[in-house]
Length: 359
Image (cartoon, rainbow, N blue to C red; front, side):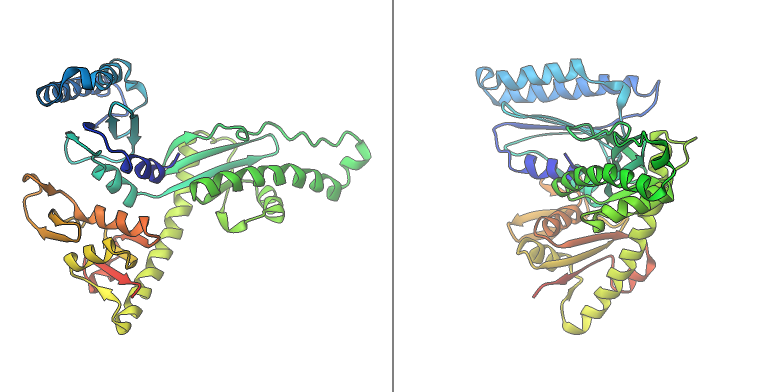
């Protein structure tokens, strides 16, 4: 399940109470040893607050989950932050490759998704297919890191079952290629099925010949970003992720440059907004066709009503959303708009946040 899917599912949850705990974590020892202690302290603080406001009998399932999460926490496989979402009916733990501004507890009738939204909006999720006739592995990646290997009814594939036992046929390159195509056709069908479920595109790591044969049988070639040559001496996940990210990063740079030009052209049609309050209203109303944000820009704001915000300077004040930009971006994405975060200086000609509206 992608981060986007997780956000959408958690956003639908309503319960009293919903507990959200977010904390920075460490990937390596000995720093990672501290993470379980920090998590337990946050869980204990949250439990104390819950008991002050709720009848113990009503929240017993939640309290039991909180205790179990603290005891079973796997500190050996951390990323950069951990996000725990608990209610009587929900238990979700999400690790992301994104540091957060501060450890945080939220107890409300909905989950606090601000950190997940920020990570999603400023990250790129994609798939990496390591393709060979000796086996096929599929990874889900975010930026330059592997999040997980996909293991389902299709992946991973073992060695191709399409052998050529006849010595004479082995010397026929066309016959051999056809056998490889049969295998790769099955791989492609499985990849298309998974990619359609996740809406993610895929980088292929393989030999040039294998990539060529895959493209010859691909049912939906547009789901493949492109290809990088495989180095059989360096197929560890971190090396594969680095290869994939180099390709994706270049493609994203080109897409962002094209988006900026499209935004500039939309100015003459009076379809460009640069005021944050107007942009927020347009996003909520579903008018946001494309949003471009300078990567380091964030803006605290207080929500006045469903369509109105007040910009503030203190992100820690009561009732303040520490980054309204992430909420705007999520509104645009959830309503089928496009969002780009960029460090390309050409966006500054328009402003640090700018929106092209549909009407």
